[in-house]
Length: 162
Picture 1 (spheres, rainbow, N blue to C red):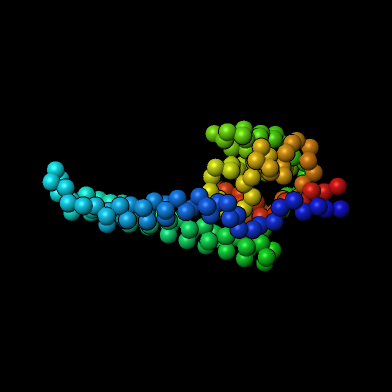
Picture 2: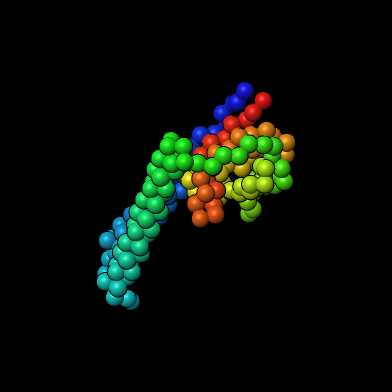
């Protein structure tokens, strides 16, 4: 019998982190637009710096958001078409990520290594046990489906076997 612990989905919490450069972009743009003439400095230079900073942050937001959406769509398509690798076995060499972060959580199943962190924006499963993740200790009997993208294994499915 198999209990589904994780299936690939859009993680809206990660999306909130992407709002940071967008919010900063809007803030810098508005500050630059509101600057008054200042006799100590040429105001057009300061406005230009703020507006260029706003543009750079907007480009960062669009690039990161776009690449995240494209990666999710590609992984979803591969998973639904069955073009994934699968490993079944017991969790070994489990290394938990501390609540404070500053490390990657990792484990192996049948010689296949996986690592991830809550603090790295990535597609697929990346929730450490200390933050409510489903892989919690050595000895768990799991089935994992993943996509290997340039050496990085993106977990798209985790099932616990009983």
